[in-house]
Length: 199
Image 1 (cartoon, rainbow, N blue to C red):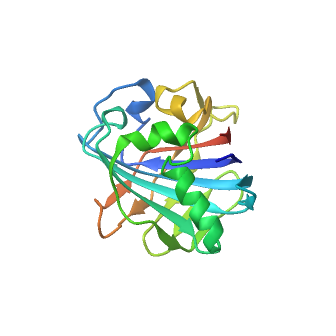
Image 2: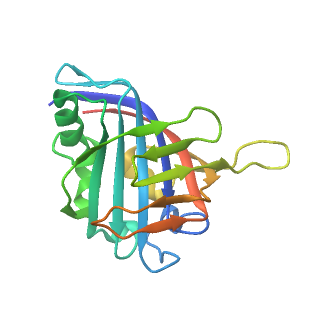
Image 3: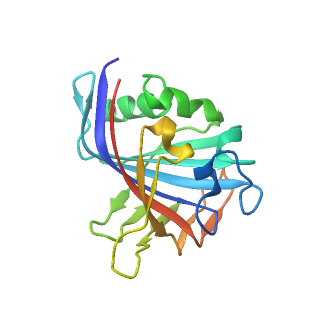
């Protein structure tokens, strides 16, 4: 079951300002929360299958806040992944291989079938992610008057992901419309962080 992944998380959700779930149990802006978490894997392997360069998008819809769970979720695995890579990534990100995702997957009541998609990521300080015709994330970093990026440290919502720092961004123009999930537009919360996991 041994696996390890290192890379970047690019996130956006339906809340219009800083995600209230960062602070623990919360009331989302609209009473419900939908989000897209894109995991751009820089290096990694599982069961000797190389996962470097692959991407996974975790699309999640929650009837309340993140901590309350009872979510519907779907994984999108980039369509450049071969059958072995897709199998390992699906097992990791649904929690079947332990590690932080064993905890995160407990938030999900209903898993929709994993789908392959053309996932495109732009480099640079203002990342853009597109997931086929399903949706996109567009981030603009939030900076202070001297150009330093605004960060959040040790957010409650990221504890189980073993992520200690998130660089905040605006997600204006982000949107998702999976036909089996709630469609949403984002006009506020976004973030970028790094992850490094082993299990």
